[in-house]
Image 1 (cartoon, rainbow, N blue to C red):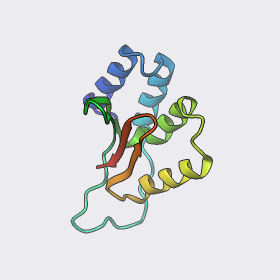
Image 2 (cartoon, rainbow, N blue to C red):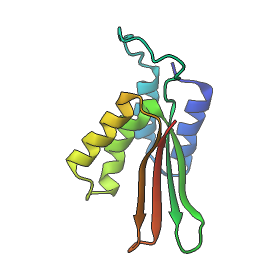
Image 3 (cartoon, rainbow, N blue to C red):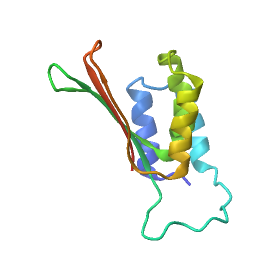
Image 4 (cartoon, helix red, strand yellow):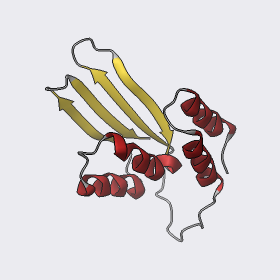
Length: 126
């Protein structure tokens, strides 16, 4: 079930023009869908990842260009929507990232310095 905080974040993304109203409706629909419980036992002492965080920093000024937090349930849909903005993302890279997210691994999963573009890209699963 979608929390009020998650719904507000979707509405804010629509307001800021980051996603369309139709994409927002799809994200809310996905949030309200409850997946069947898997028979796997949770790791002891570990909490389930809740957020997918993306940070892009301008290496020259040190200012954040992108600072977005996405509920983990939106990652797959968000990646499909975002793929249109990064056509150079290869299918293998997409599959690797999705497997990392689904595995429950937490922490920094991407740390890339783009010297040509002057950007530092970090992706976290928390």
